[in-house]
Image 1 (cartoon, rainbow, N blue to C red):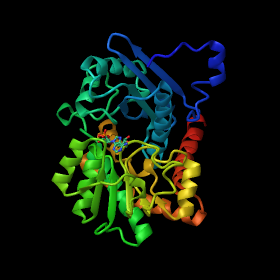
Image 2: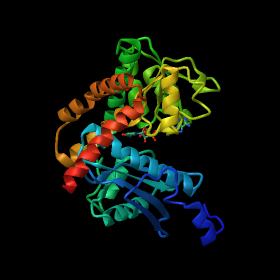
Image 3: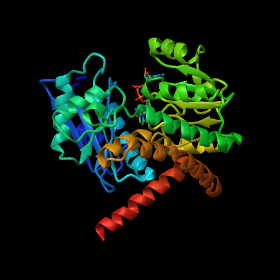
Image 4: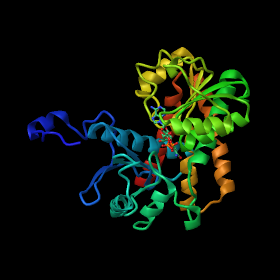
Length: 367
Ligand SMILES: NC(=O)c1ccc[n+]([C@@H]2O[C@H](COP(=O)([O-])OP(=O)(O)OC[C@H]3O[C@@H](n4cnc5c(N)ncnc54)[C@H](O)[C@@H]3O)[C@@H](O)[C@H]2O)c1
């Protein structure tokens, strides 16, 4: 990813960091560059008002550094609101490592990343996200205590994905209750896009409840594995967004609800694990509202994972993790109802609650 060096005057025009559309008064952005291990990473700290900025690390082969920066800014902002609405004393942060997780991830690279995390003295606490495994967090743990999601055998809460999937399942059931009058998913056609750590576990929950599940992924091996294990059918068409389904569950990457896809979507409910599903939260949130498509806000229903890793910091047990995650059902239903009453989008309804909690704490901290 090398380009001609841009002149200082041209750089000024682009405002590459603070001028990014996704920049939202972030507190700190850290660029990590370690030639020896090939590490190129960006840590985004959006807010530490409610507590240390906690959020996972994503390793992805971004097309450009702009894409990586944009992703980390959007993701870290989302973490702030996720923890706020879930009632956790955590701020929002996230990290991205630029590269292919399958071919470029090495123990040395992970430890080098851990050293950068350590240099922030706990202001940012990392965890796993796309392209990461529990074993990678264990490697980071060798150089810093500021990491969660480490193996249970090493005193951690383990892989957060099954809990994330359970929370998404709860949010999906709440949205189904709101839209169809019944939270039971039996007989509902559900399209799960991305059947990785979270998607697979979600497929398990919804097939157990009798939903008709259609899966899509760019990884053929996983598709066949999930089909054979849970009896889901692999999507065979050419445009998944036009598929006639009741529920669309985005569980791959973000921004799949965008200008190109939004008018094709036939699903009546959107509820999935991916962060930042709406490319433009205001615009696309409003179009969904106008089209009568119920959108269960991503940062609300995919909070199971952060609840799980927060347990590592606060020392609460599995029972409490499950109780808090199950509560996503009630919160989602409340948000959907309040959006309806106040004639605002579901995203805005959720965001307002999160922002209010942050504003209150900020006043307390200052006063
Ligand atoms: N793991 C968690 O606990 C957690 C928590 C909150 C949010 N999330 C979000 O949920 C999403 C999934 O996370 P994960 O941990 O399961 O990641 P993962 O890497 O295990 O799985 C992602 C899956 O999506 C597939 N994929 C990628 N691009 C695709 C495309 N264009 N179409 C279809 N499939 C595609 C990949 O092949 C992979 O199987 C991510 O957006 C992540 O940020 C995860």
